[in-house]
Length: 457
Image 1 (cartoon, rainbow, N blue to C red):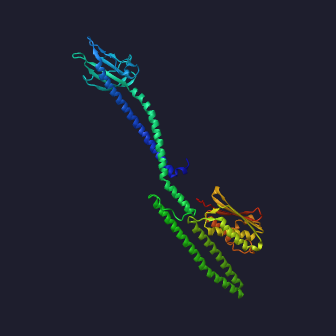
Image 2: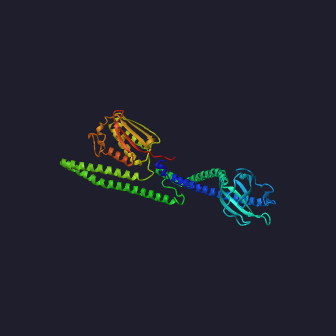
Image 3: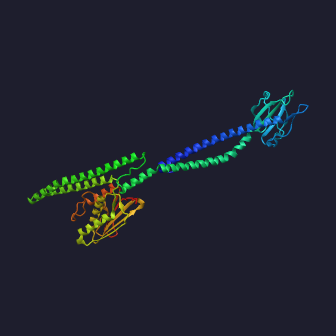
């Protein structure tokens, strides 16, 4: 069995119940077997006492004092050789008469005889093994010499009865064990049903189909559900505050940066070119860092909140519409083929920012065609978005270089050098990645991979 099987609460409960049932059934089998042996022994002993009473009523003594039976005993086993039931009448340590079942063997005699008319039970070693023996001194007539009567049954007779009883007993106990294990499995399944429902409810929240967990769980589970709802509410509030703080930070830095840029323009107009360039470069560098860090902070906050998902098709459609207008003078043909089930486990704003940066790069460098393809890779539980252009592309050694913050390979083309680094960091925050390679169209192909959102409907 695998380690994951033993980590299953259901498996642990079922295995524990099965072991407990097996031990209980085995102990019950031993107890019932011993109980049957005790009952069988008591039954045989009762029969021997009854047969002894019958034997005493059938004994007649002739004139020489020799005993005879008026008729055979009613129990036919005493007339069958090897039946295990024998009787014997003796006097003075010598056997006088005995049952046909005894054949030539004689019952052993204890060293001393019992008191007159007092029956006693012995366990003696007979010709074929241990025997239960009841014996008694009997005076058939007044003045006659007493006779020693013995009624015996071999213990093997009881042992032979046990298998006849144990076979159906074992089958019954096995069936009982299977029935109890099945009942335990049903009980475990029924008892853990709220946990399965909780998992589905969490999946619905994670897929964005519900804002919180329902409040009608059993009393043992409801406190956990309430804690989870409180945690999700706190996370949601943290997200709102984080986004508000990021916006406030951006707004608070926007005015000082604008003043610095304006001051640089004044210096430039006064002929202080070098100072103006330094201020402009540092202001642009600050702006890039601010944009980059705010994007990361917003994505990190979104990643911690369940229920965020984004459908690729509608977002990409809006971006394509904007890019068509923005690059209208290039007469680009933008082709998109996105599967309807292509939904990312990602905040829509962050997905929009990633796709907008990738599409902007493709349209900026593409000559005639930009192709977009989106599909779901079920084997890896992720969506794949491929964006290709037919532009000049990049050399293989530049694929890693363009992901550095502020890195631009061509200063003649407008840009901040933040687009691909932001895409890379956002993708990593959501457990995805971005890869670059050469397109079959001759340009660059960017492949964005993000976790897929599993919808429950």
